[in-house]
Image (tube, rainbow, N blue to C red; front, side, top):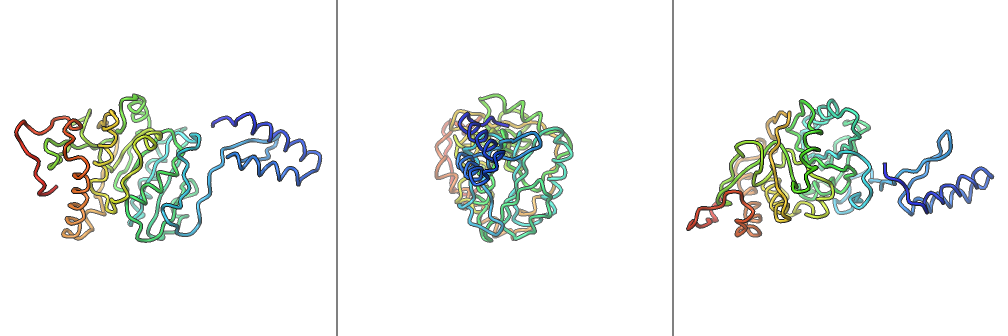
Length: 311
């Protein structure tokens, strides 16, 4: 827990004094001044305690851009784990249960951004559910959740992933290297920016897949959030990975104890529709990164030419 600045401590001490003297109006005024400084004062058995204030989230569906951000606030938890719920809440429930089983003594923040109108209480009291307007695109929904992150590390998750062991320690170790920006159990490689294949093993890759992405929270300020033009999830992870690599950082595959269940958004979307949406996303990626062979581990052979005929 971060320490309050001296001026806030002084206000808290003044509040305790006037409250003990019975001047509750003055105590309320000091509480408001403490809140304006970004802190919450609580009365406890042996005095008072200060905690960083977390902006409240509206109870009903809201616009993604109206979700209050925590990214400029002090780190409050060890890890933030975040999902976008576009259907199949039972998958996200399974994922959350698996993380809880292996978090140990860590302070973990769980966040679900929901565009389906699910009952926010179904996931448990330790899960912050951000209810968004129906029709909110994947990128905007993902970013709304990321803005709520209070952890030193942030895990971007898909509901298809189930944790079977400790994933926190390995990722904390890897992401402790300032040269590594993104890490996860699934990565891809490419030679021509047209065909993307599964990374052959652990170590550097061209992009970390969005099923499970781990990063330091501060990276979200340096690299920016996901491109909200990606209203469908495909290729958004590649585009984000390239932005991280453009900062001079590596993206790496890490061996983690996870099960990847079927990705329902892919398998339960009409094939012609998903092909159209995927192609549109790929061309958006290509418009920005088509000439950045320096970001690819094993770029196209000399004399070859990029073709714009598919993904």
